[in-house]
Image 1 (spheres, rainbow, N blue to C red):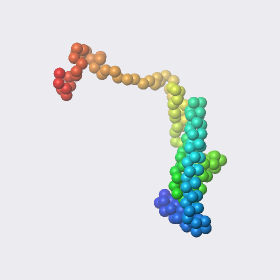
Image 2 (cartoon, helix red, strand yellow):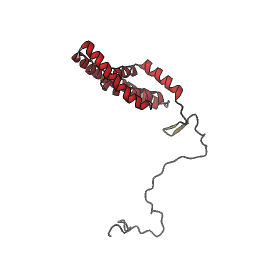
Image 3 (spheres, rainbow, N blue to C red):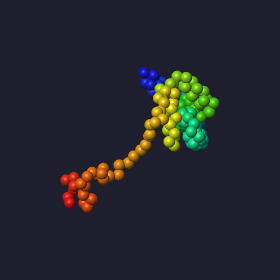
Image 4 (tube, helix red, strand yellow):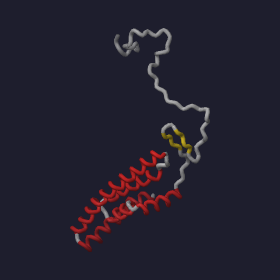
Length: 171
């Protein structure tokens, strides 16, 4: 229900703001502001997005939890979408998502209401159990394998004909 309210309320708010701002400063300055915020937003999203990607790569290289850099990157992506959407309200919300202290405050607030049920990630053969992962048995061997030829060990196999004898192909 709240999503329906959001999809109805935001466009109505944007239309009301366009009417108010357009009435106060005129049509062309209003359109100029919308275009300038899209250009500035694109630049800011690009620079901050690259920084967030670098922080994510650094966290992964060090074996640290990548959750915070991922959330920052996701919020920067949402900011970009909001800044490219014409409107003053969406621009204000998008610009606020590009301010790192505001992003951090939103993450802290949301973090109190979001609970991870179980987390486990693997990096270069290491297993790091999350808060609710069961402990691994040290006698368990984890390996990958590839089947090269399913018929290689079958007794009585004729190695001279490799064209197949499935009936689907002609000899």
